[in-house]
Length: 346
Ligand code: HPA
Ligand code: ZN
Image (cartoon, rainbow, N blue to C red):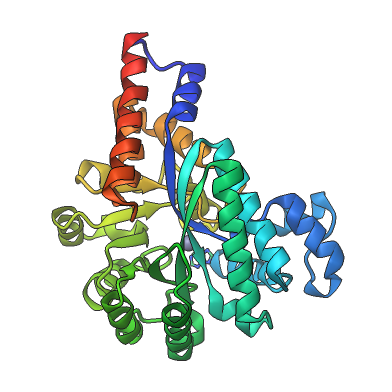
C-alpha cells in the first residue's frame, strides 16, 4: 500500500461508507436554511446575513453555544421546517457517503417552543421517507431529554416517545449542560425507555468529569456515551468502557469549537484508541461547527497519523456500535473491507 498522500487520504475517506451516530437535528440546519429562517423570524435574534451568522456561530464556551442553538431551535414552527431540516441533513450525509444516521431530536423543546407534537412527527416521517427515497440515506431517531429542564422534561420526553413511538425511533438520550445537571435524576425514565426497547445513549463527560460518565453507565445503563471526552483522565473508567464495549461518540471539532479542548491534537482520542475503546467519529452540530463527517475522519487521521486500516476500523466501529440490524451491519462492514482491499491493491 502506498504512503497516504493528502489526495489519497481524501479519496479513501470519501470512498468509505460511513454512519453517523451523533448529530442533532436542529444543529444540522444548513447555513442557507438558518439564514432563510432568520429572515422569517427576526424576533429570534439570529442574523440573516451570512457574515454575521458566521460570527454568531463563534462560541465563547459551551453555555454560549447552547444559547445560540436554542435561538435557532426557536425559529422552527411546523412540519415544513422539520421536513426541510431532515431532508437537508440527508442531502449533506449523502454528500459525505454516509448511508445511515441516528439523529437526535428533542421533542420537549419543540413542544415548549409551541410546535404541536403532530407537526414534529409529521415532519420527521415525511423527511425520513424522502431521505431514503431521494438520497439513499436511512435515518433513525434518538429522542433526548434536555437535561437543564429537569425531571419534568425527562417524564414528558418518555411519555411522548412511548406514546408516539414513531417509525425509526431507536434510542433515548440526554443532552444540554452537565454541570449542575446530575445524570442520576433521570434514571427512572431511562429504565422505562430501556424496558420498552429503546437503547440508552446519554451525553456524558463532554463538559464535566469522569464521574458523569460513571453515572451514565451505572444509573442510565448507557450503551454508548455521547462525547465521553473526560474518560481519559480515569484509568479505571477506561478499563470499564473497554471491557464492556461501551462505544464513545467522539465529536472532535465540536469539542474544539465549544472550547472543551484546545485543538484536535490536544483531544484525548489517542488515549482512547490506545486503551482499546470503541471510538466512533461524529459531527454533533455540523454547520454550527463548520464540521463534516469526512472532515472529522481527515482531521483525526491527519493529526494522529493513522494508517488506512485504522481509518477503516473507525468507520467499522460506528457500524458495529449502531442500532442497525445485523444484516445491514454486515453489508456495510463488507463494503468497508472492500474499500480497504481496493486501497491495498493500488
Ligand atoms: N451536548 C449537549 N447538548 C447539545 C449538544 C451537545 O453536544 N448539541 C446540541 N445540544
Ligand atoms: Zn451532542
